[in-house]
Length: 267
Image (tube, rainbow, N blue to C red):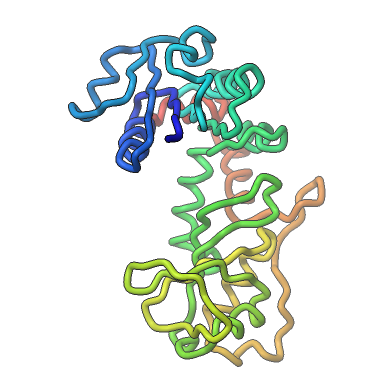
């Protein structure tokens, strides 16, 4: 049975702990403040380890040496990164993830091979994808290089009855799975889109706006229009999404305090 170690008994850490235990896994939760463990359910059977999450002895008491995965989800970016590095480099934990409030730092550590979840970027992304027409897709997962994203497609109702193969060809995406009547299913060559289906596809990040534009229109409306993602170019050559461009504008216009300070104050 896989063992999981979580650093941080805040809302995210507690939710992770409960979900993993409900799935039948063993869990250890680390926090410096013993009062934080009160957030855990009374019937929580996992370990509650008081201490600093990047301290080796504390990690050993959480049974890090037998951990399948380690998640650092405290409020401190530096602590999360340091703890993740100790888990990976000292204890050779194969699956490690760190929660980062500052999206710039998250991107930096992601490129160093440390999987990160940027709370600020996630929140901004979720809001923009619901209020901007060209950002009408919800991103669920972005692979380490940032070039591919698993996203929920928003399709015009006239796509109903068309095969998923037609949708893939029209938008140049690869459909991974669909949810129909609340159940996930892998599509076959003859699977068609039905009203109410939730379609998830792998998309090139730089083409998300173009994919959204194609699929939000009825089939055939864009037959004579070339598929061309309309994105600006960042200084190092990687196309920037609307989310990234908005974040850059916010950082230019915002106060001089760091993203880390803002993230921790919000938390």
